[in-house]
Length: 174
Image 1 (cartoon, rainbow, N blue to C red):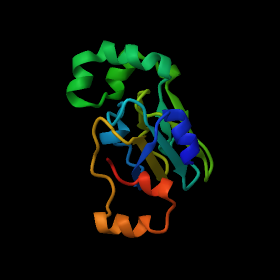
Image 2 (image 1 turned 90 degrees about the vertical axis):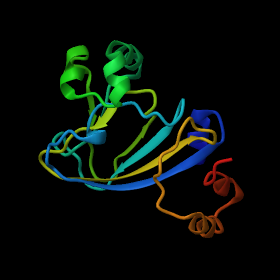
Image 3 (image 1 turned 135 degrees about the vertical axis):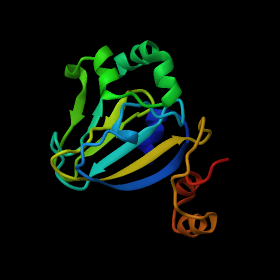
Image 4 (image 1 turned 30 degrees about the vertical axis):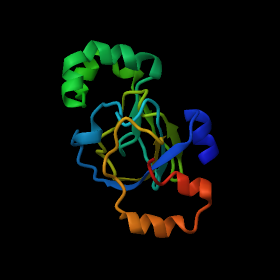
């Protein structure tokens, strides 16, 4: 995994953490269920694994192609940058729904994505709950970090004791 991520980023990586999620099928477009671009670094990798079958009404990861994202961000300008999230209504005004790409799949589907370079969201689930695990990676000098890992420094050190030096180096920022 580290080889793949470091090859893409072109630098040694920081393991941001892993998130285990249950998304209730309530159809509410809140937080990451709205369009956004992740701000943590210039490039980053997220690896999403579906822990159940995810159909179009089950909250699939959805994205807009990379080649359109920067021009869409420029078009949105103030509204996007002031809130960080873009509603479906605002996105539909500048990007037809035909270019919104949902990633549905059976249990075990794995999605590799650079969430810094594309508009994306967790499409609000309406028909079934979505269970997933997401691994996040940035450079070792990210632009910003968010509190994600639920481990203390001592717990991380205990976890790191069973890892190779290369893996340990990914757990702590310089």
